[in-house]
Amino acid sequence: MDALHRYGPLIGRLLIAAIFVLSGFGKITGFEGTVGYIASKGLPLPQLGAIAAIIVELGGGILLILGWKTRWAAAAMMIFTLAAAAIFHNFWGAPPEAAQNQMIHFMKNICMAGGLVYVVVFGSGPLSVDHNASHPRA
Image (tube, rainbow, N blue to C red):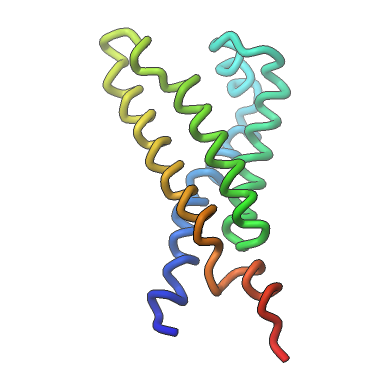
């Protein structure tokens, strides 16, 4: 197996997971601010929403790094990312001075969701817990 096929999926998982792990950790350290931001969007139960976001971002990011339950983690993260794009980065409803910034964040989320779709479809690759569990060495 050539190096690109062996290491490429791991590098891709690490790069995709980085933003989620950092964001999940930031939500823990700034929990009240996260709750306030969620509440400002009119969503119900903002504390539970913040906890769910932490679980998806931090938990899903760690699963993606490890390559364990990768397709499930990527699917949950993709749904979360698309929902976050629509709810928190709705550039079409933003004031004109904020619209471009919100559109950039919206498109960032769409691009991340695209990477996560790739993981859902093609899996974790050879350097992963998922691969090692399904291909045990004799």
